[in-house]
Image (cartoon, rainbow, N blue to C red; front, side, top):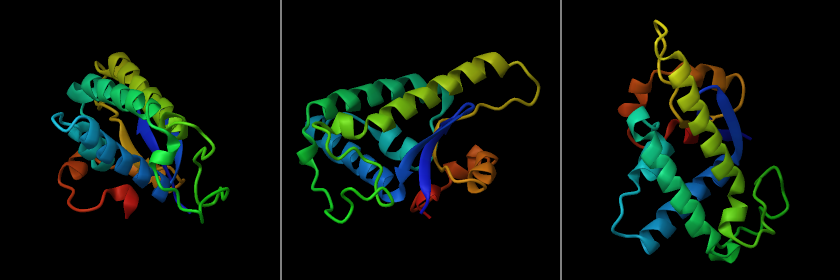
Length: 170
């Protein structure tokens, strides 16, 4: 079983299984399009899902994620049809399925994202003047070692040209 996480700066935060993370992004797409169809959510639904968050987009992406967290706090966890085969099986899901709202179900995701975003900002501000330092972007990655160690070194340019499924789903 692969574990997926958010990585940014010097932080790596485990989120859960591939299917858990895919469901999170499915919910972001579905519920933001339903509630705010006129807004552009691609910083979350494309950049964070498949690529990485550029430094110049980090603050806006954080604001969007806060909006998603607020929206999810207004939606009962029953807004999602849960697969009965996953329930109470930690090898299949890390979700808090007894939670009342989607914000509670996905609490780990919000905390992890903001932790990685902050780490990315702090590292950039602290090291940007050092020769050879490169921005450590917030991105969704395979968190399992040694895969993560190789993924951490992947140039951001490779993400920019991705087609199809994100690397963490392959």
